Image (cartoon, rainbow, N blue to C red; front, side):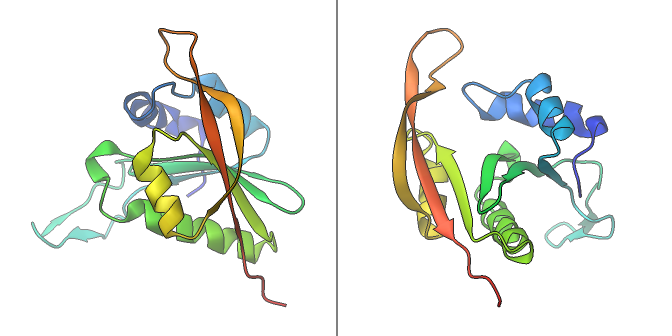
Length: 163
């Protein structure tokens, strides 16, 4: 579902425990105001947990992403899965949905940046056939405590478009 300003408390709770240098409320608000495509992933009200037989709370945020559509590429700015739900395939499903959005909107390429230290994200993108196309030197703040910077690996994937 599209991200709303009302979602930002839940988004920031996940963002803050997920990233070395998390986005701020202002970063998310600016993205929403700029018209970036922003989505929140929550369970459907009737979705059940097979193992326990309980229904999942649709108020719980599972994941989110921010996409910047350009003329010929879709730039993935942020994708984050709740720490409690990692390694369950949700990231792969989200990336498949993002690729579907790109195809539907006739956008032939997805581009993203990833920290070399984010080994799980890097492995996911490689598994999904994203290829390294460059490096952005000193792109990311390494931490909030230091002035050190970390490079970004720039990755891209061409999307098959139906003619």
